[in-house]
Image (cartoon, rainbow over the protein chains, first blue to last red):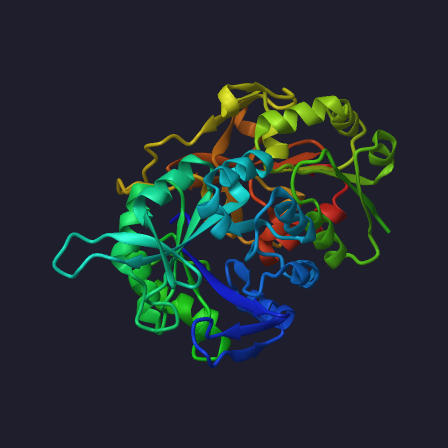
Length: 257
Length: 216
């Protein structure tokens, strides 16, 4: 027995409300982020990720306030992402009670920002979020690229190479989201997860596409993920965190029960 | 009513420690401070730490926190060191090409290495990040009401190896044997983060708030 694989419920927060359906037009309201975070904490979630999907300048105060309220009640690690572009943004979220910040667009625009962030705050609190899509044809060797703007814009950057570079720059953890899977409930991109997990020394979180508990199991067993992140299956009561953990345990995965 | 000083030397998120203490005991007076007089006036003291050891040690020495920590230990007040706070108490850390630490406890802080494996030969990721089982190796007031092998939240790339095995209060396994907790008189040091370890962590902090600093 040793380190447990983590289950991380994710709160996508838009203007102070948890929503799901980021890439769909019918964004569903799932409720108040503080209440939801507390519920997952009570259910035994291993961490909570909070993604500010509005991430506008005016919205920063709301986000910091919400993070502060969550941190007063939830005593498990809390990661905050969305609009983290400067050292000041990071300090603000850590001061509000976040344990880690997730850097996305800013890492692509300026890879040295990740180095600066890790030097300032330590790698342990710097997560780089990588949004990727498979760009190779089915009969070719698999290749994935980094995408931005909710998966609409290709960057031409190879996802595995980018992951290696981000870790060299000081990222302590990677959050991989398959943009062609997100919201589809068809499961993680297991090949991409495995390729990146094998290529880097740091923990990897699989995300994007979870529709059932077998997907979580596959993320760990086939994808080699150290943690699995999901949103909708928990928000709308399809499964609870303990159900997910028991299912993973039944399939031979070490979890914190 | 009890007062707790959380030593602030500019490294890391001290609010989570403070808010966990306030949650446990709303009447507790919790101060986050680098002021020696304020720290020494508190009933009990927490020495946290997050980040790279060189920066931590530089700030500890610049602010005179090294002397304060020694004074707290000499005063017999309960002192809880967390994560890099624990590592700073050792003699030497391999991090940042080697950094001399406070030499309050005997032993070193070593890197997990790039070729860390579990007992089945599978690659282990570094940092050691997540919930691992903690084996209590000695009876101690801080373990009260915490089940053997309870999981606590760890996040670190360097681990403590104490030279005096009788000081080890808990171990954890991650490719190597980690000193998860060390205890000596009024000092208790943990590698994991009790403030982020849910019920088990809150119980340990509760025990700390009730601890008189004696081991029996």
